[in-house]
Length: 120
Length: 113
Image (cartoon, rainbow over all chains, first blue to last red; front, side, top):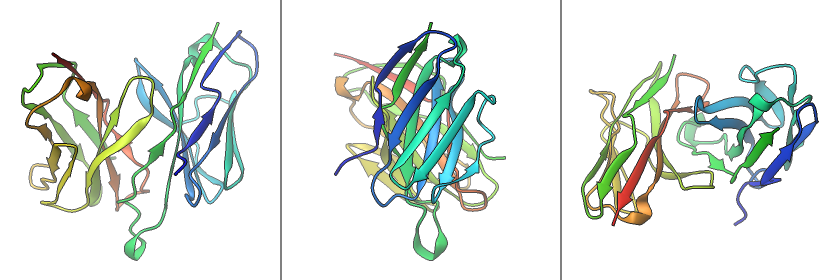
């Protein structure tokens, strides 16, 4: 089975450039999460979609960050303009928001291999 | 709010040693509990889970028991291998909340031959 697919795997760009990260969730999963991982702050949730609708974007650090999910099989995270402090590994994860009796808590997340972003 | 606390790493062990990584949690409701593992250059992957009190999750020789009375979910393995070297994350998903998972900071495990 195909897992969560992220692209690119690595991105190096100069400060001020626009960066677009892409994610294809597992087919049939209806929840999608974007995370950022750094040594200093660990794993941070940026935004969460359910059925393609953004539910919680309180983790998005600034207006420079935006995320979209135009359909069930594709999402993007965009940074414009990028800054050196945005350097991190960005992960996309998907899960099924379904469970017995409406209990979604036992559904694990499935992570992609991440995009390592370096802003010079 | 919900939170997960893991022991600080790195944990350094010799091959075949016994492993314990402590995890405690606070939750508004009654959560499901998870351990994820992250190998270098990869994303997190589910290692095991437990969804109710006294459940034991197990996989690849790793075990963890859901202890509601002590709000803990410690990870154990009887004999570690070099290939177990990775970062381990404890996490919860709260039935009383939004179901958005809460992760611990991660514990790095280094196993020497």
